[in-house]
Image (cartoon, rainbow, N blue to C red; front, side):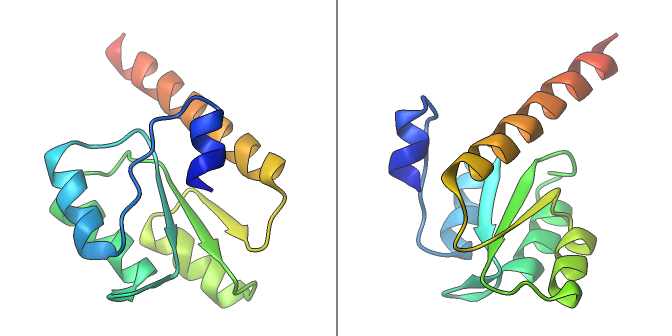
Length: 115
């Protein structure tokens, strides 16, 4: 996935676990976060909720990737703070569309607040 995003022109910082991701976010808030529901060091949905409160990342676009298509998990993801959910395996063009949509809506939101 990182390679594909880099081919599309994105700067990608890939990390191994939630602890590394939190450290990266505390250094610099990224334009977008992609996270799995299952992390090596914990639950991805709990991690999202913690990032939202600890790093004042309330407007940070987050996409969840998951093998779990259950409605309960999807609802938990949105309640934790995700803006989109993608069930794996997925069509790479669907991933690209979701990323572009989130980034565009983020730019529009920032412009609207600046006025």
